[in-house]
Each structure stands twice: as structure tokens, then as C-alpha cells.
Length: 300
Image (cartoon, rainbow, N blue to C red):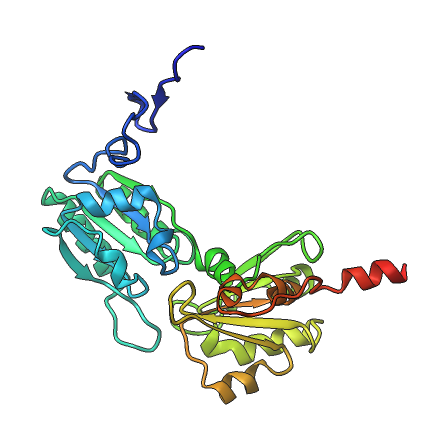
């Protein structure tokens, strides 16, 4: 049998397969060069959802510019000598302007720093990573993008809710719940979204959920349609509120449910009765037929 093939990296160089991959798995990953900016996603919260590329970046960075939704435990993996700069944005609270964040990244890179821009989730999913990357291009700063696990997929998985399932939906729509100024996005075709997408995942929508719910109902969604809100997704204090379009606002008020949260509308929420794997670890008994398909097959 011939030996293992050589590996060609994204940078174009050739690396021999690592014989000590179990102990030195970061050695074959890209070198973080001075004057570069790496835009990385930290995932929804659980440090175990970091990619190896993100971990590699944390270990090499001179400066880490991080967002509000980055779990502090993730920063424990950072190079101890790295400077950490908070650049978080939270709705309704004073925060640094986007243009100032981009300017800071450029300034640090021009000073010869290895700059890690660390964002919760994925930098290109409602994370404004594209805007920052465009600023770097305009300034002539070399950069790399490191995708992350977005809350609309990974966070819901921790709640036991798949975003797609063969028996419920073959499409899913991801929607931001507010514009940069805080208003409900008016440039979205809410009627088309309500009528055309069996599953809708809402980011940053809790403050406008009442208005969005009315838009859903006015455009044909059923009052009994399942809704789930997931707070602190993938973290030890994760909370999940299961409700319906008709009762979501009263249930949010009754439980004093707070953000930030990811929200999902659609029949996939019913699958949580069977797929709440975290609940099962704590003794929850999972159902075997959450969609009642066995009963429908028997009736047929």
C-alpha cells in the first residue's frame, strides 16, 4: 500500500501529514502574519463549538477585538500576551460605532499587529463581518475569514430543534429582527416570507416580536403554529420557551423572558419533544413520534 497523500493547504504550500496530530494539531494550521486581520466566528457560546482555525487564531493573535456575544470562556484560549479590546454592540445601549471598529482594525494592522476580530456565531451571518472586510479591502489590509457556528443552526441544535427535517420542511429562512437603527426591517417582503418559508429563524427580534408576530398572522400563518425562543443558546444557563404564534407575547411577558435570543417559527419546534438531548441528560423522557406520523400512517 502506498503512503498517505500530501496535503495542499489553502495557502498553496504543501504539508506532510502530521504524525503527532493528537498532541500538536495546531502546527499544520495557517501562520498568523503581522499586519493581517482575521475575522473569526466564535460560535453561539459553548467553547467546544470553536473551529480549529478560530482556536489557532486565538493562540497567535497580538490583539483580539471581540463582540458582546463572545463567551468569556472562549477568551481563555487566547495568547496570554494578547491585548483584548471590547467592541460589543447591544440593542438599546450605548456602543461603539461600526466605522470606529473598522478604523481600529485598520490602525492596529498598520501597526504590524496580528489582529483577530472575534464575533459571536458566524461573522458573515448578521455579524457585519462583510462590512468590516470591505473596509479592510479598501485600506489594502490583508485578511482571512474564519466561519463560525451560527446560533440559528447550532443554538437551535442545543435546544433539540433541527432547522430542516424531511417530514416538516425543505427550506428555511433566516431573518434579522431589526435594522441598524433598531426598527423592524421595512425592506423585507414579510408577506412572501410568511407564505413561502415553512421555517423562519429570527435573529435579534425579541424587542419587535409582537409586530413580527402580527405580520406572520396577517399573512396566513396559523395561530397554533409552534414557536420556540432560545436564550443563551449552548451555554449552561440556556433557556427554551415553547409556545405558539397566538400566545408567544403573553408567554414572554408571563415568564419575563429576556434576550438575546434566537427565535424559530415552524413545525420543526415540535421535534423538540424527541430531540431535546440536553433535557434527556437530565432525565427528560423523549417521545418517539412527535409529529404523530405513525398515527397518520396507521389511519392511511
